[in-house]
Image 1 (cartoon, rainbow, N blue to C red):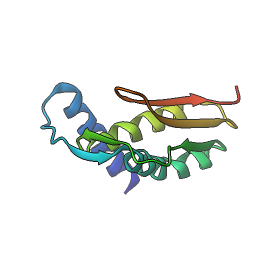
Image 2 (image 1 turned 180 degrees about the vertical axis):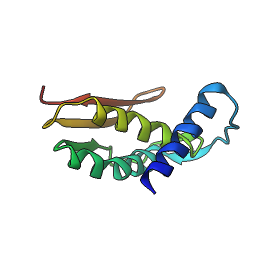
Image 3 (image 1 turned 120 degrees about the horizontal axis):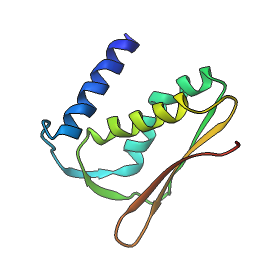
Length: 110
């Protein structure tokens, strides 16, 4: 089941990159998208003895985004886990800026 999901996610991301997928922008709270991606990848990080953390602002940040944006963050986090030596901590931080939103993914320990 997990491999099938991974293949579907990669196919969907490829469609986004090539422009073959239609985007349906809608008002979305970015914290929800990031949290869902975190939940999807946290057990994979744990299995590699890595710690995955997220830092989200308390105030909801509304963005115009396609629900598929979650797949992009899952892909980014999966790559971070895959290419991080264990044990380490991977942090994903969301912060509001005047004109946009900054989302950072970084290794914390090494």
